[in-house]
Image (cartoon, rainbow, N blue to C red; front, side, top):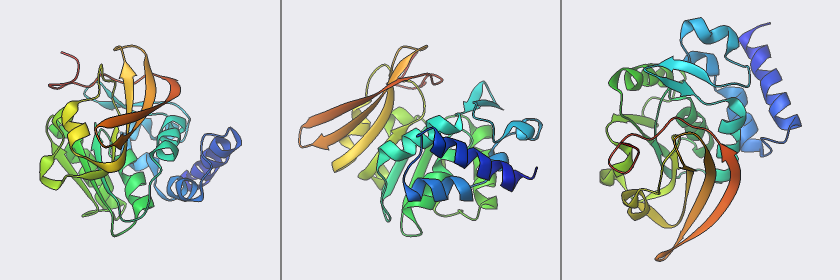
Length: 216
């Protein structure tokens, strides 16, 4: 079976299980080749619904969790989006596909080798310039290009980093796995003036956020 056939089957299964529903998310997951974002040895498993190691003790999230996060982000074309924990670059590429040519994704990754590999995969997908991968402490955000319409964190955090709240646009949404190192709840917050309106979407497990507002 070709990668394209495997990707089509992955999307069909995610839809059948209710993890992805919107036309935009379905089209993005059909369009972006996950196998380009994993090490060559892991490519036979690229379209299995499981996390995969990408080196440096990090993983690419299972497709169902990526799909759930894309749905909860409620993305629109032309948005300015910030990602904490860029990892493989796959999630950022999917977001870039959804928000279109006039949108922009700033992806922050703390490990240089992963950031470089993510840039290469993003370039191979034709998204160079629409996704900017920066090396740094994602818990501090990236004030230079704020405010952001959407912020999403793909690593576990003990709290919502205050700089990210400050850099979120009024009415913007932030998605984050909150909890301990070993078990978290996926939480969406919407910025309403000085208040944050919260929604919880169930349990999840992510690698820990390392940074000033992450785990030590």
